[in-house]
Length: 386
Ligand code: G3I
Image (cartoon, rainbow, N blue to C red):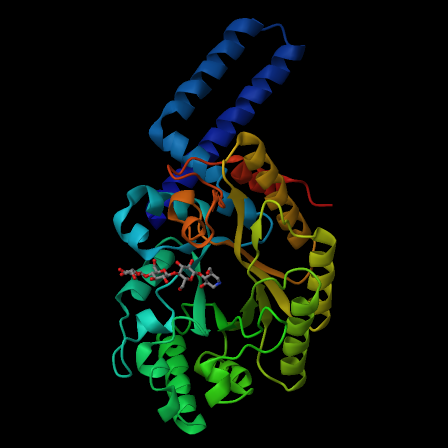
């Protein structure tokens, strides 16, 4: 929404609020005065009804109750991963994204393979389009991701044998400087290294680790910090949200990085859950606490809760409760960062193609209709803070 539109809407919202307060005033006066109660209150209510029936009034009401508006009242940025083709082609997608979220993550287009088809070629168009959209709608951007074992360009992967520590370090360094440098001051948060700990809780065997060595992680953070000293730099991973072997391994990794003076600011916890395997809130709180003791912020970076088919209203209600528990636990932590869902519409989600027999992992259905989960997140955001 353009700045002017936003101003008009907020002025109109202020007028509505004033009108509503006058109606309340009239109702109170009537309770003590001798005016004809039914006629005056009826006039006031009917004028409110006409006022809120206009499209612009409905828009401002929806904006007033949008998740990003409610989250701002809790000093929180609430976000979504963005599918760039939907951003380009789908008006409803763009409108819902701009109305409801205040931080965006590129689901794919800033990964190394799509960004860098060859060593000397960068394809910036889709990444630039997302950054421009975000800035137009006063949204922050969460860069994803500088170093990952997936989406490594073919020109790197297929020549593994020909790379040395020096030559592959040079490639990674120039990549980080090119990408972080291009968006310096515009992308506030970066997933510098993604999923470096394996499912076995050992350091993952990747081309970066095999060729450069274990210190590829520290090097990546140092280069990202050099490229944009003001950026918030995260280590991002999955199945490390609560407590357990992998979570301990991630904790030990980031603790060692901090102890070595590596410029890491926080941890991204991806939060990909299934309805039958929900997050343990107490473990999540304990994990946030111990990361906070390391002076690290914690960001929910890829939250979705996939639902086993057939999708029923009962399962969607349960999903909403599980979403609400994640947010409640997160909001209670002093070192909370940003809170991002891995998409927002079930029609644009990775889940059905990656998890056969699961779907409906997000806040809106495929027609951008809010689901029970949306209202549960709104409820938690509106809940009074103690
Ligand atoms: O855009 C191309 C299109 O031009 C081409 O025709 C098509 C056919 O190959 O591929 C399209 O790219 C796909 C891309 O998603 C955009 O839709 C890639 O093949 C596909 O591999 C890619 O999958 C993404 C995956 O990461 C790998 O990058 C998923 O959408 C995305 O949800 C998933 O996200 C990851 C996070 O980055 C890290 N955490 C786990 C999470 C889920 O796996």
